[in-house]
Length: 327
Image 1 (cartoon, helix red, strand yellow):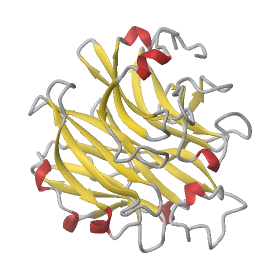
Image 2: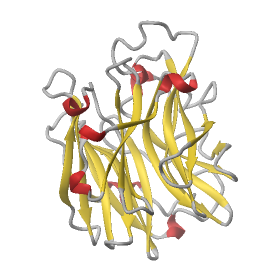
Image 3: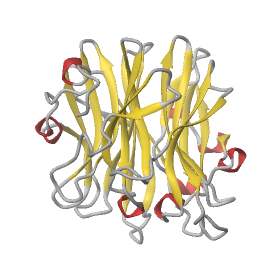
C-alpha cells in the first residue's frame, strides 16, 4: 500500500450522510455500494444509528440511496427494524440478478434466537422491496456460529462471492451470551470473516471462515473484511480490526491480501492502515468501488464529537494498489 493515500484524503472526503445526533453512538454508516448497468446508476445502502436508550436506538433504520454521479445521492427506500421484529439492523447488500430481480441482503438480530442473521428481500424495483417477503439466507446455528452479519458481494468471472462477518464461539461463549442481542459486543466470541459463493444470488455454497484474528496484535479480536479489489491475479481487502470488544463499535481499517479469496494474510499486522484523527480514531466499513479510471472509497468516519458520518473519497488506483508491502 502506497503512502500516497493519506489521512488527509480520508478526512477531506465528501460527506454523503450526516448522523442524526452530535455525540458518540450516533452514526450514519455501514455503506454497501453497487453499480447497476441497466440504469447506469449507483446504489448505496447505509444505516442510521442512535445510542442505546435513545428511541428507536441501535440500528433502527436502513436506507438505500441512488446516484448517477457520486455527487448527489437521493434516498429511494428505507426499512425500520420493527418491520423485521429485530433489535437492530446492520450492514446490508444490494444486487440485481440476471432475472431482473433486485435482492436486498439485510443483516439483523433474529428475534427467534438473539443471533445476527442474513435474510433477503426481492422485488423487480428497489422501491418495491418489502419486509413482508423476507426469506432466510444464513442462520448462525446452521454453521456452528454465534452470529452472521454484514454481507458484501463481488462478482468474479460469473460467480458471486459474499463475505460476511461471523461470531466464532470461544471458551467464554455460554447460554447467556445472546441476552444482550449483540454477541459481538460481549467479548464472548471472536469476530472473523467467512465466505459463501453463488452463480445466481439465490443458491449459496458455504466456504467457511477465511480470515480470523490472531492471538496478538491490534486486530486480535476482530478481522472483518469489508470490500475487495482484484489486481494482477491477487485480491486486496480493506478490513475492520479491533483488539477487544471495547472497540466493537469503533474499529479501524487494515489491509489484507489473498491469492484465492479463501486464505487471507494481513499486510498491516502491527498497526491499522487507516484511522480518523478524531475521537476514537474509528474509520470503518470501507467499501472500495471502481468507476472508470477512479476508485471510490465509501467509509464511516469518526468526527471530533465522537459521532460517525458517511464519506466518499475518490482516488486513483495507483494511490492504493502499488505494492504488497505493509502500509
